[in-house]
Image (tube, rainbow, N blue to C red; front, side, top):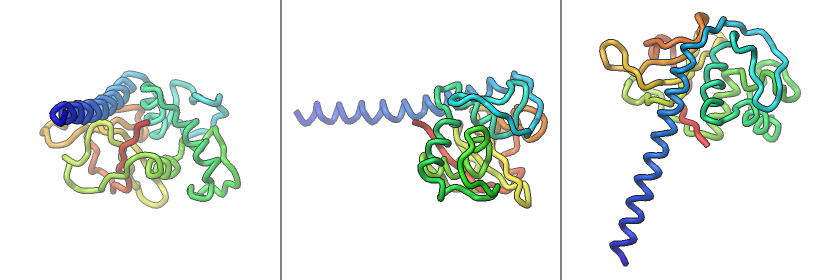
Length: 193
């Protein structure tokens, strides 16, 4: 009986670990797929459908990379962020002077995504060790002043093999780059449902 229980625990642990790793690889792969889509950097405000709304497919910013990659694996950040903000508005940043939620834009703001990932995902340590940043992790940076940025760590390595690359949009469309430590990291998360 004890041996059977140990075998069941072993398989459950391995199944859970494997499932988590598969989800991370799927997010990494979905982010990489986005780099084939030509997108013009466009921070304009758009009225979009809800749920599963998106800005025009040929436009976007850094947050749209994250939103689109998650959508490819069946997670609607527009809906999830909106519902959490509606229920917990006071814990989200008030940078934009909002008095209520806006399902067209709230999920497209880096500080809101950081708050959501911190609340609903796993907040990981910020370090200068590239091995700490795994495929499927979300990284946020400060670009100086009030400017923030976000990207997805993917399962491709830098030319020297020391760092995982990032899929992001910092002005040149949805691209794959070796930029993990180019800016000050202010957030590091893992998120799945």
